[in-house]
Image 1 (cartoon, rainbow, N blue to C red):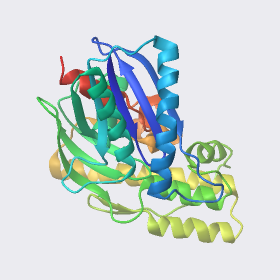
Image 2 (image 1 turned 180 degrees about the vertical axis):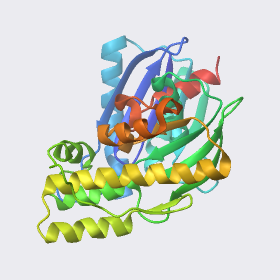
Image 3 (image 1 turned 90 degrees about the horizontal axis):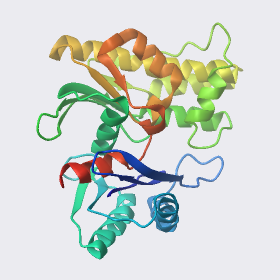
Length: 307
């Protein structure tokens, strides 16, 4: 058994795979965010992770029995860059290192972003070695070039200059009275939009996109009486169209490659459908179940460097 641990800003996650890379069990728990708030302090996140981790171990062992670990891996930072750091990841790292010591097995560390990428490839069932990845979440909006021939080599080609895609969705969602994180509720609301949803401007320059202007536009429209469902669909369309325009610009400059989509925002069915139609067979999507934060990528990482 190979255990993965991920303690992101809003989800505590554990996953166990076997030597064949098959998922034996996984468990997640969202951190509680007070209604009306748009996030948590890092100290509150760490505290909740510490409460959740033993609970999730109990869920795993109830399903698969005693853990027989060969290695443990944990997300230690948001991105694979020097200086990338968030306190919430220390909860998972401490827990994972303690388990590895107790079982006398290796401990491996990876970034949260690498975990998303590995879980995306695994759940999409592709084995690409040279491709682009679009990572859209509440904390990341990036387009990366990936070389996965021997190890994961990532280089950023595009991203946001202000709000992340998930922040855009969450801010509008909270303004609409939805609970945080607002993604699933906003998607459900958007499905009720009329034939002419709110037109939201797209701000793209080369590989850079911006969501602060579009967010202000939506907030003003809501104050002026825009239908909530039409505003929700307008936000979804803006995100999808922004990503597509960035990918067009990157393809012109760096060439056409397959594109993998990961991150919690990519669980949205409207955004997935829009991009799938635009890109066709050159697109792969993390499954809806594993697009958001999870620890499967960390478990796969532990397996990869042990076997």
